[in-house]
Amino acid sequence: METADGGPQSSCSDTRWSQQLSGLPPKLLQRLMPFQREGVEFALSKNGRCMIADEMGLGKTVQAIAVAYAFRKEWPLLVVVPSSLKYPWIEELERWIPELQPGDINLVENKSHTMGIGSSKVTVLGYGLLTTDARPLVEALSRQRFAVVVVDESHYLKSRNAARTKILAPLIQGAKRAILLTGTPALGRPEEVIGSDEVGTFLLALFKRPDSSPTLGRRPNMAAGQPFVRRASSILKIRLADELYFGSRRQWDCRGSSNLEELHRRLSEIMIRRLKTEVLKQLPPKVRQRIPFDLPKEATKRGTALMKEYKRHT
Image 1 (cartoon, rainbow, N blue to C red):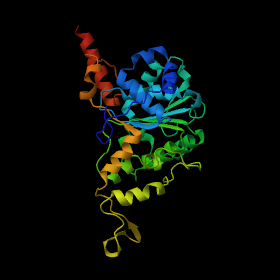
Image 2: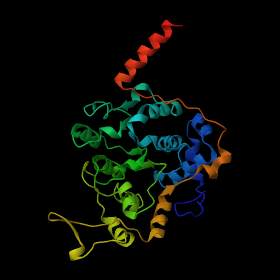
Image 3: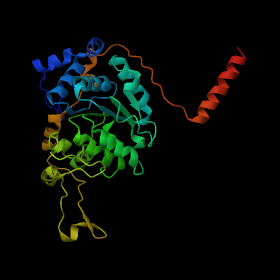
Image 4: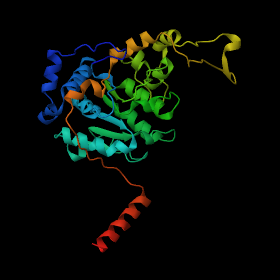
C-alpha cells in the first residue's frame, strides 16, 4: 500500500480499531476485503476524518458505510453524492445496515424538501441542490448539525468559489466525523488541493475541527493554511505592480507549485489511496451491481412506448 507521496502505507491495525470493526453488522464485516478493512481501520485511526482516494471500482462506498456505522451513536449522518448516485447509495445503506428502517433514510428530492432533515437518522442529498437559491435547504442542514458527514466524489469541491463548496465546507468542518471519497484526488498544484479540500483547514489543519460553530454558507477560515500556501505556491503574494487586481480587490495568483514533498506528506497523513494493480489478488473475478437511476420524462415515455410495441408483437 502507498501513501500520497509514494512511500509505504503504515499499518493501522490496532486493538481499538479491531474492536470497532467487530461491532459492524456481520454481513458488512464479511464483505470487506483485506484492503478495504485496512481502509476502514485507517479512517478509524484518524478519528473518522480522512479521505479515501482508492482507484475507481475498489469499493469506497462500502468502506465509507462501515466507517459511518462505527460512529452510528453520533448520528445524524449526512451523505452528499452526485445526483445520479442517490438511489445506489440508499440501496447500499439498506443492504449493509439492516437495522435501518424505511423511515430512517431521508432523500432530499428538491430544495424545498426540508421536512425530514430534522427527524431522520440519515439524509441523502445530491450536489445539484446545493445552489445559491437553496436558502431553506441550507438553513435546514445547518440546524441539524450533522455529526457524521460522507462526501462522495469530493473532487466536486475543487472550486473554492462554487456554491456547493461554500455550503458544504462549514458542514464538513463542523462535523465530528467527515469521510471524503474520490477516485481522482487533486495532487498537482497546492492551490488545487486546498481548493478541493477547502473544507477549510480540513486538510491543512489535519482535520482538526474549529472551536467555534460554523455558519453555513460562510467561507471557511483558511488562516491555518496560509503559511503553507505561501511556501507551497511558486507564485505567491506578488508585490505591487505584480499583484492582481479585480477592481479594488487584490488577489493572489497561486497557480504554480513548489514544496510538493510537503504537500504529499500532508496528504499522506489524512489520505489513503490504493490502485487496482496493488490489490488485484484480493479482488474477486467479477462483481455485478445493479444501479437504479431516474430516466428523463421523454426517455421514460419512449421506453414505455417501445415496451408496448414489443409486447404487441410477441
